[in-house]
Amino acid sequence: MSLQWSELKGLPPNSLQKVLLDELRVIMSAEASAEHEDERLAGLAAPLRVLWLLNWLDFEVAQGGLLAYLTNSHGRHAAQAGAALREIGAPAMAAVLDAAAAELGDGSPEPDASPSPEPDASSPEPDASSPEPDASSPEPERDRYVEVLADLDDRYELAAETDGWGDKLDAFPIRAVAAQAGI
Image (cartoon, rainbow, N blue to C red; front, top):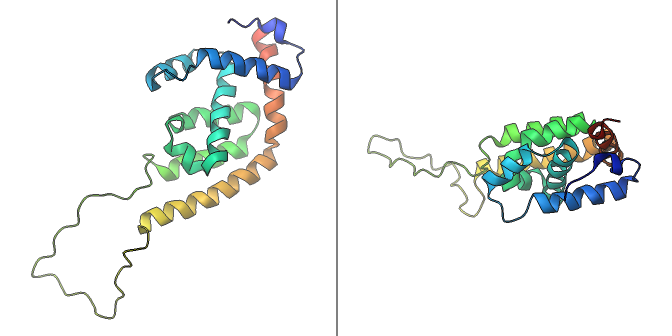
């Protein structure tokens, strides 16, 4: 299926998005490896690329927040999704996404799993008044990620309201299709 951009101009936002999403389903098949998906994504026209990036971002965030998105396979596109948010006019959302990606770093909220060095005989004995770590509590580093990313999720929701995310997502394909058609 090859889109005729000039024929899409004038469609209502919902119809236009449906046509674009249908085209994406054909182009970005689920069987593609991450490498092939990345190649296909790079070759998409702006209306399709932006819609695909933001559709996955929105889906993953709705399912489990920014942590879910950034640790899922589509999180590898976080920088491109941030650029797509800026492209539709949602800079506050992009800034929060960028902050979350920077916070998560390598994409893994798990603390370093390397074994602790064995104490040697010269090590001081632990202070008896110090409480023993609670083996049932999650790792402190994991707790920090969860707390920070939960705060970023709240900021992301607020940024979506501030940026007028829904209206901008509706308006972008109309502008982008017109630009693609050379109109």
